[in-house]
Length: 383
Image (tube, rainbow, N blue to C red; front, side):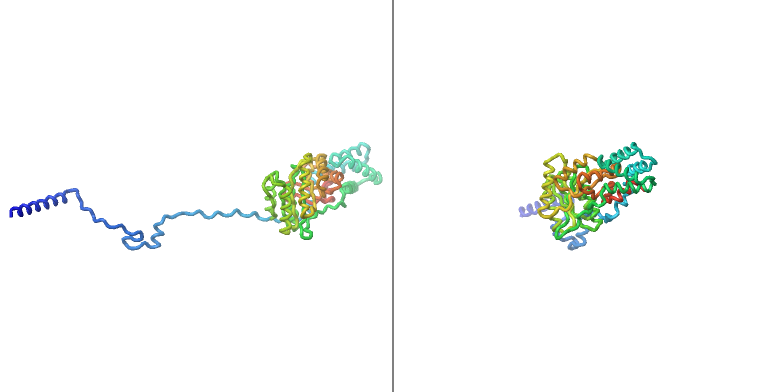
């Protein structure tokens, strides 16, 4: 019995001590731990699509990059009458020569000194010594027969003599029309600095203005800038350009350009070649190779030699060497504006037996014009 009372007392004591410890100040009962909610559950139920979208962080996306705008295709003016339209520009640089001759020939008396001055004026215009002497002699004979001379008669007389020397009957047409199943092929040659690549681009504009379809071949692979120039010119008139990396074989580029021209059925293929110094035999031989390779699949219809009209006798020496290598069919005289001397037209034709077919009269895109002898002489002599 005593043992039972002792055990009961110890039990009561233990309960009292435990309760005191549990309820002492500063001790708070811990809340029951709940199991973690599943990923798609909330206290209110499942997460809706709308709630998920709202909860997701907003990511701003940049608008898609716009493609660069394609250059607008230009419609150049037709070639007919271009030289007439550019007459004022030509006259500004050339008519000092014509005005001097007209004043000399209008004198009441023409003595030996006056005729020497006329001859010197002609030579100063780059017309050449032999041609200048011949013109002066012909004029002297006709003036002696004519006697009294009005300004109108003098002008008509001088115009007739200049036209005769320029050669109004020479065939100055460009063979640019497609023949059979092949395009016309134009090879453009010349030394550095004459404006050869620019001439190719301007010529493409002339032909597009006349209704032709054109392809450009960038066979000047020594200058990356040359191919870039052609790309710019071609994009403006919708002409495709065939090019390769800098240093590629020029003949293979020319061959590919002509082949592409045949496959795409264009009217005209214009091949730009490297500006070679006429003293470098190896480069001139390479130019001959370009022509031979092209002719394996299509005839070369025109070989146009680009000459700087301001170079005078040096330009003629260049012309002779090129003519020996590639059989030049026509001359393009660039830079005929400014200080250029129009007599070079007569001299270069005499030296080569090849007509001047195109003239460049400025830096504008449409300043390349078919050469028209009568319009040219009229511009030299003025109104």
